[in-house]
Amino acid sequence: MKTSAIIGAIACMAFAGPTVAQSSVTASPPRPDYVAVMQALDKDGKKVDPIVTIVHHDGMFLSETLRGGRASIGFGPDETKPVLRWSRQADGEITYLELLLRDRKPDATKTETPQPLQEVSTIAGEHCTWLQTASKPPAPGTFIAREQNCATKDGIVIETRLLTPNDVPLYHTRLARLDRRPVTPAEIYPPSEILTPEFWLKPIRSDNTDPSQPDFDITLESIGGSTMRLLRHYPWYYREQRDRGGSVSIRIWNKREDQGISYRQAGGYRRLTAGRPADDGSPPLKFDEATGKTSLGRSETILGETCEWFDLMPGVQDAGNSQCLTGDGLPLKLDISGMNLAFPYTATSFRRRPVALSEMRLPAEAFSLEEWGLPTLQ
Image 1 (cartoon, rainbow, N blue to C red):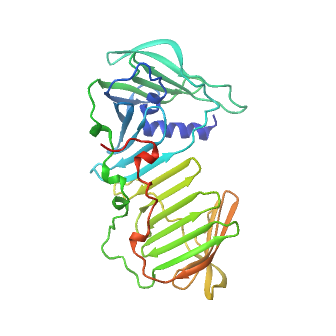
Image 2: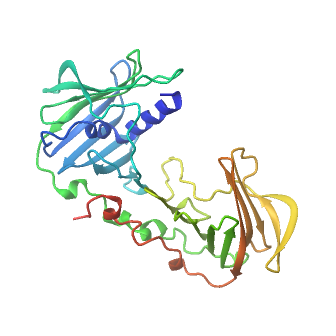
Image 3: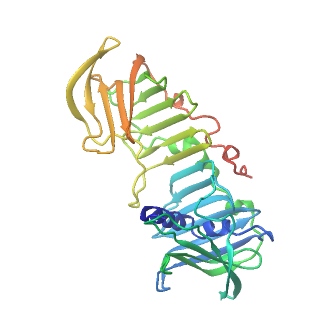
């Protein structure tokens, strides 16, 4: 595993905490309902942030990672993705949500099941046996971190270790408290209000109008047959892209706030992210790709309307977003690039007309837990 891959693994485990380990343990015998509190440890075994609380009920997990007053919460089945995640500030305000579903290919570096180790431990009065996720020989110039979990007889993971080849812990958690007790669905299910677009798109300010930014409805097409629809009801923007292969990408955002929803579906991959402004210092979720506005010194006439070319991502090396804008901000031609690919779009129709926020819609299934492979709320 290359360094970047290890960093990604650490980030994943740090968010989901022992839930990652819980999912790697076989489901026989069935695990009981329980609540486990796990403490992160540094390489010397000293307590550090975060504290992770795992709640299990009927094959579903909720993990809450508490760091500096902010909680990162994950919800999903014990062995399969998708995963629903959301973040909650210390004051209870929820400011981030992600739903992720994708085809899972077997990890070429791992075996199908954890392998038992000749090691047992007693942690917080609980006896457990260590298992290790066996790794295949890495490619030259890389190394693979070993994941080890200590599980009780009824399948509850009570200690996790992610180790380098020389046994230095990259991530380490240990049980602080375990309570085997009946868990109700209400204890693990997400708040119903965060599974609606209205929660994320509720206007924050009462008056955002700007006469210099008229509403518009624009349809654009690329040479390859992809289509894009753009709507504006300032400060709200809507962008819908569809290609011939059936993939769909929709983004709704508020240009004056760090607020919006992004949805993408392509084959077996589906992802939805939503965010609202956070006031606890956490980095915002960026929906607007523009980082500036620099004139490129040229203009065109498209559908009888004159527009001027601007670079909306000046100074960005690996991506680009150039647009030909009318005087009142209608983009009649776009040249979006990234990953060594270019995506030019040209307007085929446009109208300046009143646009209602209700026209900026996601697919009906976007917030349906059932569509994401998760049980519906009870």
